[in-house]
Image 1 (spheres, one colour):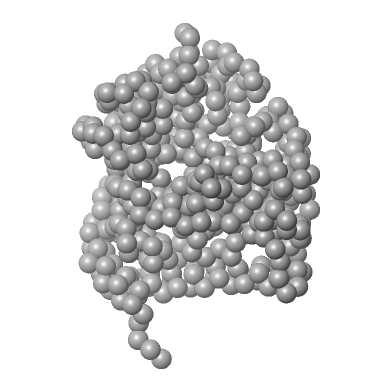
Image 2: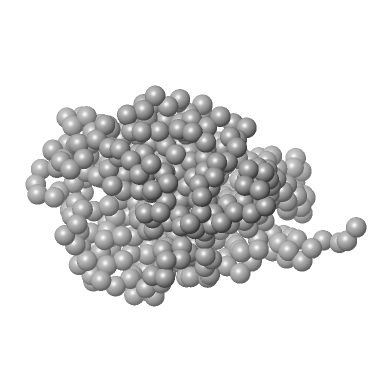
Length: 479
């Protein structure tokens, strides 16, 4: 047998030089040594899984983000770290675990690919002229209507109609997702303010609540593990920016889930939940509309220009920077591209992805295992073969998945743009928001088996197309 590969040698050298520092960071806040080792082990595993990409980026920033996410997302997939104080053994275990996970992902891919070949014969066409071919049902029962199909190189699952969402089975382990049976409040509910001493519980969800006055709102935070799960931040925000409704995104929540940043004309409002205070960061731009936290802790905010906020320092940034680790973008020539960004937000590469996609909307939601998902519009040729379905969610895992996945919404009362990804849960399960005239649900979609579950019913929203009354939710919540 040969010696270690070049990838293994490079990873081990990097990890052995970084592991002691990561353990010191993980141990802050009086975290038990065993928990700190588990957090660092899982972070190293996830870096090792993606080493072919991360070696050219900032593996340390990625490891820190993975370490914090492992602690703040209960139920994350993990492999126990070795019961030894030997740091070299911790690194070696991380590489072995990553190798096992990569092989498991490829085995999943091989099973699906073999099934497709068995059904389709020697080959199959991809694109507008391709026939819709069924994929044999997965081992796990899919709760969607009928078997998945392959379209344009992607496996397409179909979501049940909106009126049947409440009949979907409940998720078997909602505690691992940090959500209860409902998310939201009644219009007249009295919600406590953010205490001056702050709160140590992580932020699970953020929403806007209308207050008295034209286009005025407060932030409402849904916290994890508190007797009073909702906190209202009594900083008046405008709910319209640049003439459009302010749209919250999950990128506005810091990866540590202890801070939230929101763009406003000429300023960024920073809510320090742990410190119990808010502050304004002035930005010389009255058209600020979107922002997110980069992996290195900077805030990237867009308006008439693109800006980078490092602490209290504000400076212009390259328009190509992004706070997200990946973005799915439809290029003018019709190519779907998955762009990758370093922890600083700088573009480091891009790859063309297959799939029936005619447009992308909203944010791209990524996880530490390399999955990315975004809301998409389906092209006409696909709509014609999916009983009129024109929108859905696209998910792809470049390193291990055999092919992209699409969950197509039924052509029913689901509002336009009403099926969007929110967050990734454990075991490659994607949390989605589905909004229709019949109500709003947080669902979970297993991208491997195609199974969908209901998790949470969203309360306090007006009907689609109606203006919220004072006390009601403005827009939709984000995770």
